[in-house]
Image (cartoon, rainbow, N blue to C red; front, side, top):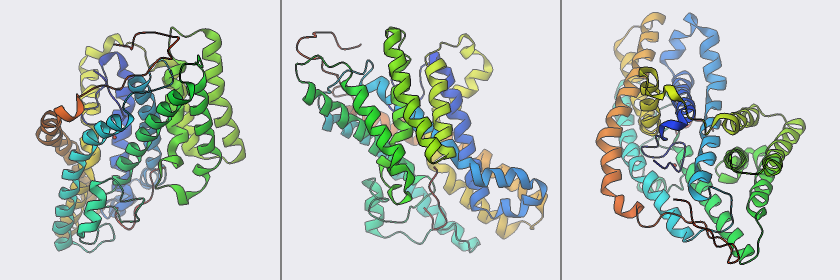
Length: 393
């Protein structure tokens, strides 16, 4: 089963990529727990029970998004250009199919977030509750342009869906442009070189300026590491080619960290190296009960990502309004919100995400992206907030 992004609808990777599912499942839990710790107020009351854990989740839990960025690039390369050849047919159609996969469940989730904010508003007064949405704000979310147009997000994590779409679109256009440049010439290293340059520009310039964090260019350093990791991990590639691709991954990232250390980039580099080593590994134990759970959590990760904040907001409001401010009771509320987020994600996946995917299948199965080989190389094509919110980088 193909997967075009780390947090795509029903984005379960085939079982041989069990490590990716494990990373996705774990990172999704960290994102939920980070938002619980960051937004409160339950975790604020529960903090005396586990201050170090709450502080760590508040400060570093958001770094888990780097896992999704790198995996997103890894799987996008697998889908769009498995061998790293220049050229791609119908770039606009490819981008449109990505939008159709990402946006419909996202729009439903934003409606749920708006309802949750109204419910929570009756039970508590807290900065994590968004102001009532206006039509233009909602329209910007529908178009996945809320960040670049300066609108407040309707839900924590809404920014990532827009960024995922931008990154996928950017990669598609770069592949298409490489094909136009190469034309009939045999330039097998054009595409990796262009991606490496784009990744380096992101690492050395865009990612060092938070003013760009509404744009995919800010995050393309992590995404590009995933793309290069897929190409470098190709077992059919010549060892010299693997070495060159690894240098294209490691050299810019290590130098960027030496100039300006950012833990988010360090985590992305580690994840990319892990995917290079084990991302394609077939795990024989994937059929065990433990791996069944991991694969399922990965399958519903996009749904959990979309609906966890509205769920956590309502549970926070209910425990603030109806439960005493005792640390142990509020900690129970946090656990309740976490488990309720998983349950809501499973329900959303089954009753919203999956049916929407089936309903819109005609828009996404038209023609898969095909990398065009140069004319001289006739080869067969191989058979993706509230005011207190911060960027998850």
